[in-house]
Image (cartoon, rainbow, N blue to C red; front, top):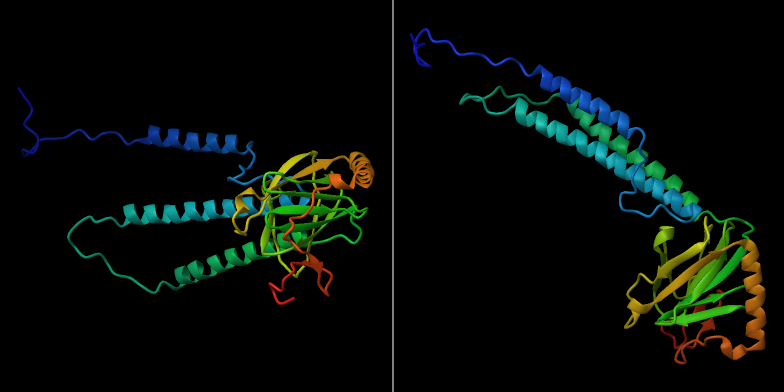
Length: 291
């Protein structure tokens, strides 16, 4: 005797048992993954962690934005997948049409507004921390940008000048607030240190002030970020952070060296004729900007 073929009257087909073991395994995997992830730190999401107190604030803001974007992205993806499988085509009949679901419309209008407001508030708080300046900084450095190099001038008269392949080094004390006054001798330049998560324009005829507080000793690469002419790609500089004691010793030693050997100080380009405007900021000669 053989059983009737499938599809004939009276035939039966074995129904596979429900996939409960698979569901339990998936739930166990999700719980385990959640427990493991709770012990992990947030990733950098491609950004520097920051080597100054100001850059740490920007770094944490970047992490918050990225996490918020991931959460929103996952939620939107779940809604898309739910709509795909829940309302997939099952027959040729036209499904029931519905519209104007007021609670849903209110939710998807109000929630994005709340998200934007929260991100805006955190942005303003972080920006206020980054741009805040102290009343009495431990050190001050006047930074001049020019085609195609940098000049670092210290309060005691020490100057460090470098251009193109002769990159200058700006020495700062670690753990102390350094006030930077940024000017340009000629055209628009950009003062940018990637590991500081920080960039500012050097604008001719206008001085920009900001504070830096480097957390650890080390050497940090800087560069110009504005296309300023032929050798813009060679307009680099270094920031060297040392202990406050070493910083004071360096200033004294460098001052004695420059006074004893004035010719050891690199000169500005011969075609650069810097002068001071009525506002006290360095500008380029020749009336390039009507000054």
